[in-house]
Length: 226
Image 1: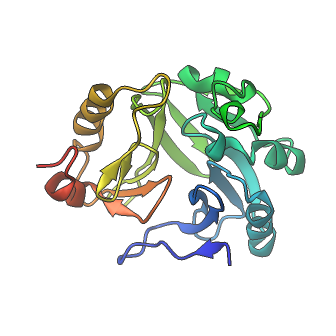
Image 2: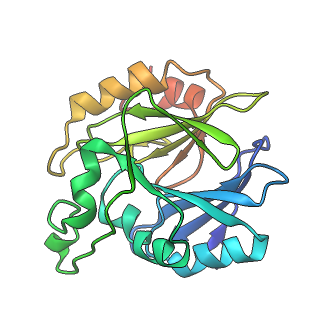
């Protein structure tokens, strides 16, 4: 069953579904405001069929496709999403945009199974905000896992922020920094300056593994906490 319940113990102010793709156990997130018929998808991976079925089952129209970064396991479903929802803009950070169409840069070519995505419809940078599907998402640049990695921050009217963090911060770990364009020091610095400055109750939905919070990682993460 590709759908997993990775909701935190306290409910988030979003209708959110996680689709975990095979091979790399990558998390794609499909979410919408309660009562809305428009949804967003973050990092559609290899299991695009399940993502499309999730949208159909819930009667959601896809308003946009968001990529936190350009590695193959996070962009593999872009082409299928654009084919099914051609009016949904594909959005990625400026620094990782070349990875969409270059199998060497997105690492799929190195594995002998080249993957390419359609080019981005919109490039975003640090400090910009996106108004999509009734939600405002702030963009933070946190490179180190990839050269132009971004995260998306949603601030609900009540409660703590929600971060769609890609491969920056995991529960008890961080993203790999040994890929081309990676930097351990840059990643740690970005986490501490930008994510750890958010409220401790901030939910972080990572690209792999279970949801966590800023407070939990500040206290316990062996790579960047404490």
